[in-house]
Length: 448
Image 1: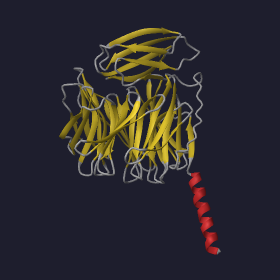
Image 2: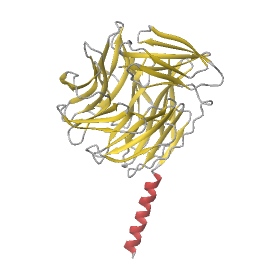
Image 3: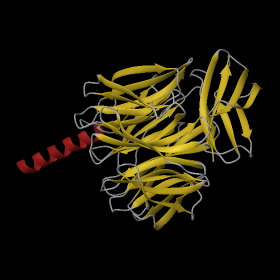
Image 4: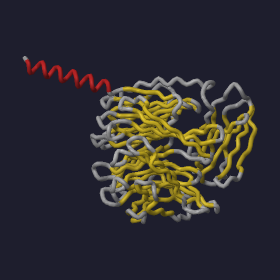
């Protein structure tokens, strides 16, 4: 009887502990687009927003239940955004991003004290457009970073860089390609090699590189027409690539030589875009996707897959939100970062059926000005949309290329959207600025 009582008490404690771990927190004044979990089950979040003419970086931490503990901000005049956060063996962490056309990173110790702030510059003629992916090297204190640059000669070139735990460059490498090329994601192999996925002349580009950035082999996946998002090294020693194809979610699994094993498409009733994917402890995958109900209403579609890509469960959040990143937490649950126009939410949910509560209520007339475009990347046309405030009815929209050449400059009256169509526009990265009264809100888009 005593044994049975002890077992029942233990079960109730475990059940109570489990239920306490499922939660959601909302951070109204803290924009975040990336996060990670620390060794002691806390969370670090970072994001960027325009504030007047400054670029404001928000960095904050939350405890194991998602309650905010500490925060700080950085301001700069340059365009830039935090891309990823990596933990260090000493329980510190590094935030990776770009700032003023340079690689930028901030190193903190476990007490959230800033240890170093580093800018890494290629040269005076090359500017970093974006940092797209970061992976730890075989040494946990070293990191491999990929992204894309442009030069004063309007040449787009992808790059790979190796960074130490002090944020200093060990080496950087630019890739020369005759066609328009773009690096998107990188994953670590078991040895000192890495797999990269990107696009080359609008085709899927798969590379294997060594620990010095040298290309070991490259392959064009001619059988597919989709925009890749993430590449992962799977637990069964293969490669998984996911992305968006014809407004649906697409996966292709290959062996370590890039030979296809299978491919699968996941269809929703609305247009969707793959945002984030993570490996799970059961050798499967958890995927967060953005649903476009229309041009100014979004939702999140989460899919749990097994190792062969079969759907275990899927859920769609009914409220308006956009997924930023999803991970499996150390206690085998999941955490997802969501935001929409000035509101950020971090939610932790169960692994059995994806139960998650979302209650983001957004009011366009109360929040800060935001701008976005869909689709992005685009082929021939895209729609640029912003939340219209009752305080104004006129805006000036300017679209430029990466060197500042004006593509379009248009006055817009009593509208909060603009249909941009220019079939002869060259492939590349473009910036749009919307001037409203004395404020400017900006965004970036990619022409395939």
